[in-house]
Length: 322
Image 1 (cartoon, rainbow, N blue to C red):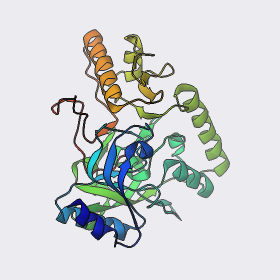
Image 2 (tube, rainbow, N blue to C red):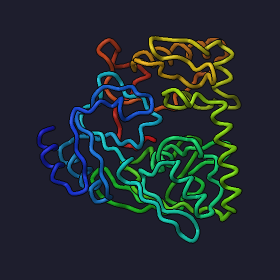
Image 3 (cartoon, helix red, strand yellow):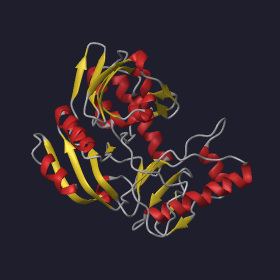
Image 4 (cartoon, one colour):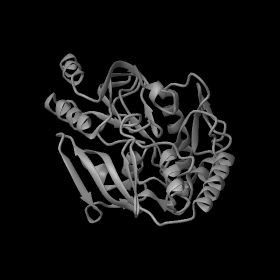
């Protein structure tokens, strides 16, 4: 089946196809076993054809943006990984905002906002990932969330069909959206944004970047915040209270700068990260009776030593990650 898909997809225009690709090279964590196949579409037509071919082959693809909020397990990803970054990255300015492809990086989105005088996205400065993944997860910071600006979103379904959803056809919540419950990938979106002074936008972005660099371990490989914010509290505070900072398993370390980050100190495996997640989550549960929920996406096949039923492990899915 893999050879059939490779042969078929290699004939699709505007599509790059690679096999046996280490996912450590495609994640900000720098961790992950090989993907059987990694494809990068450069047009929505190419993306639609990928979805049709995989659907007909009975293979559920894993869609990623930049791989910035994900942990790929050590045995890698079976089947097909579709990477939107580096392919679907077109931005168009409109009178009331921007139209962006799903693979557009948030850094590029912020730059386009400043260049065209659109405000209220300054909070995204310094956040890695892509527009499609950010909308899927409703990424946000400092009181802002990207979902509040979505005017319409064009998706490609698991069957390779295009559909454009209007504002009243989608819902957003804290780190969640209706796209997470749909068999689709975000290919393009229109963001309605308020006009603002470009100089003031850049000033706000610089302030956000400075604050983020002072608090987050941006110089070391990570997947961003490990846990979602619990009700009426902060995961970082709870983790710091239980002494998580500096804890290490192999090459995985809880950052001494921010306790809700696990960083790769070099040579960390996914199993190292999973064990560290379980240990610090157990400590928070025992001390505060709070069950922390992971914010990072954990995908792929676990190492043979990890039981398949581990609650930390999830199967590959179709929704785009950042």
